Image 1 (cartoon, one colour):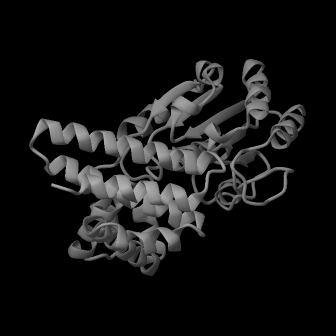
Image 2 (cartoon, helix red, strand yellow; image 1 turned 180 degrees about the vertical axis):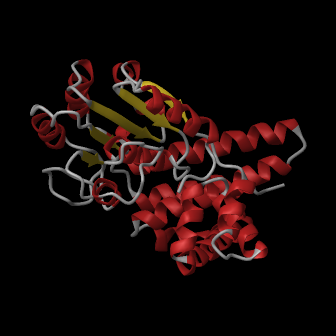
Length: 316
């Protein structure tokens, strides 16, 4: 289910109708806005067994069902969590071993008339060796193979990889689109508004709410607690930092809550000097968060710094 992104979906509908796909696309923009969802929809369209293939495929044929279930042999997915041959342990990078395996798999000729789709999420997390090996695939792309590279931070993607792909930017989704989706799934207007406020334009969060609303409620509660702690200061935010430090998902959720709180404060601020100060603090928190994700810095120390920056931003 695609929420928003009308321009991108219309573009690919035309490209598919003309049979004019590029060999590689780089989808970039904020997390959880629907970049991978559109890549998966295109994969189903290319592999659908029906003669009239629409965007996303028919959804009912064997090929569409297998692609949707992650079991289609011609859809290869790779990310920090999805591996090909490397150990499935928590890792900061996509290693060279997986790219070597990808090159080996793609060295075989595809079945006549059949597409192969490679979806690489977290492409900015390719190790240096892996990025250069992957570049060779893009320089000499296999027949009937299309690559969808997905990145949140395009500036960390190897420049030569960026130059060999067609970049497509995905922005945050309008609240109206998210609200309509939620109300179409039997959420009340009041609850839909609450989730929209928490989602902050991230359609994937709204989709998650339809599947596990209790978990979303708990995340909202933690986000409110983080905002409250930022206002109160160090004695209140240290317990949040300590608790979040041991869980990667909660670490990122906590950092995101600080960023969103600062941005809301920035939008409320009318004085230019204060706006500049808040913008700098948002940038600092984003920088610390990226370091926490991409390197082996101490998570607790990173969270303490994030909270300090956030708390300073909440001072009038």
